Length: 112
Image (cartoon, rainbow, N blue to C red; front, side, top):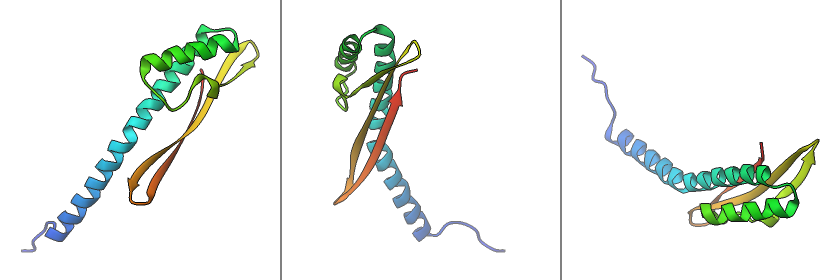
């Protein structure tokens, strides 16, 4: 009868890969959560104001309430598409992995 299974070396390799993926996820998930908070704040700001100043102020109030620091109201690009106000944003986030290695995440979004 032939035996089946995983060798000790295979289990160690799988464990190391799984641990690396968990550490990466633990570092990336907070940036995604921050992006979602920014997207929500942009949507609310676009709906609550009619002028550039009102939209920027609404965004700053949401920023204070939701505790994110990646961008400010001055970083928003505000335009009109027909009769609808469109608010766009873009920013980069660096996540330190180890030693000299970083992961660069580029976030972009616009109001709905």
